[in-house]
Length: 363
View 1 (cartoon, one colour):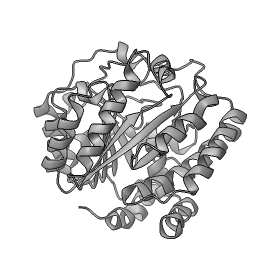
View 2 (cartoon, rainbow, N blue to C red):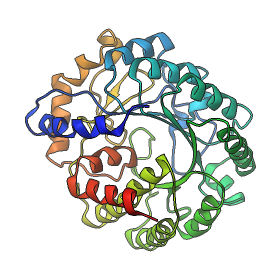
View 3 (cartoon, helix red, strand yellow):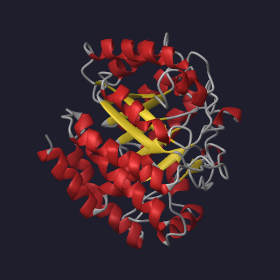
View 4 (cartoon, rainbow, N blue to C red):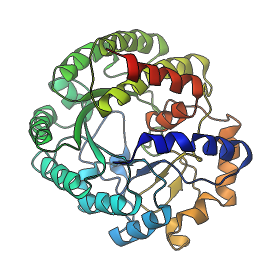
């Protein structure tokens, strides 16, 4: 399995890329969105309404071949990723071409009779990667069903979780997490969600604040909780997490999450980029139709891979990408996007140092 030491060694190179444009680097954090199709109808997301001319697996193969070994962390996102029939093959292609240290897949758990077997195959075909399956949980019982817009979702998620936890016992490179979107719809019940998640047997519990995103077609929707409510709820959650002893990759993830929660509080209060954003330098997303974005919040169209013979470098180092980087580097935007925040915190020495201390010396 690829070591984090290789990532840490590249941090000065990304700093140079961001500051002066050299050396030219490919992203270490890459999100693949093979399809926007989704079988949830969440109050915090409208991506399920979208339909695209989706990339075929042979197209993904050519794209990821051009990306090569740069990514350490690959997220296969959606929509609902397991609705994409080729999700197992896509992960195998990503593994063969990129050899990521981590493959992360979020899921709503509705396909509980399909997801565990798909996870088993992905883990087996990608033996050198840590596979993380994160199950969505936005409430307990009918509250989850109400926010997710699907009756019976909670029970199906519980079934899926039980199967994944059983699979984990025989699959050393599988970790199982629970992921909550903190929104105006559940901010008052986050304690209940956290209590359930932390007692579930999952390896990790992570949350992300609901926010307007171009990708999710939620720009303008009042889904983000107010700062005071978020501060109170997240302080209680942080105290809970600090009392637990996480192991393996979850120990690192939770250390980053505590810093992420602290960062979100400052972003909500100060309404600015609190630490430098490396979206467009060290992190990127490839959308279902082949469009490259620096992140899913702004979703700047840097170009379409179908128009450049699937060569990621031709888009990543072109003028349109440089213009987006100038805007991001000038702090013309700010957001609490969790996926990009991992990379940003890794490149911010004070934050990365605090994360390291928590990993080394936490209970």
